[in-house]
Length: 70
Image 1 (cartoon, one colour):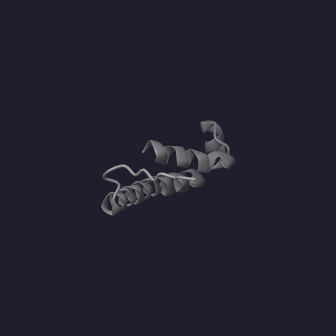
Image 2 (cartoon, one colour):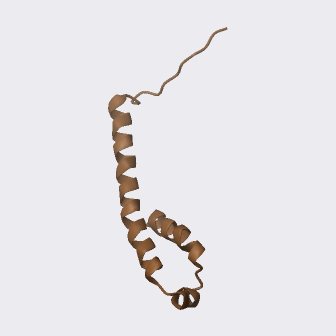
Image 3 (tube, rainbow, N blue to C red):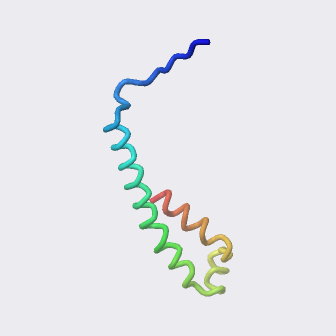
């Protein structure tokens, strides 16, 4: 049996480190939007949530979507 290991040029350690750093920065930015959105939604009364058409079980998904759209 014979195997071939093909690696693209430029996928060195520094490139992987830069990609990791960019990923961590993007996650931090999303988290920075997620938490305040989640906290604001949690402070709304049941009546306010109903007026907005939001159920409490939807709050995490709404905060996550807001963070992704950032």
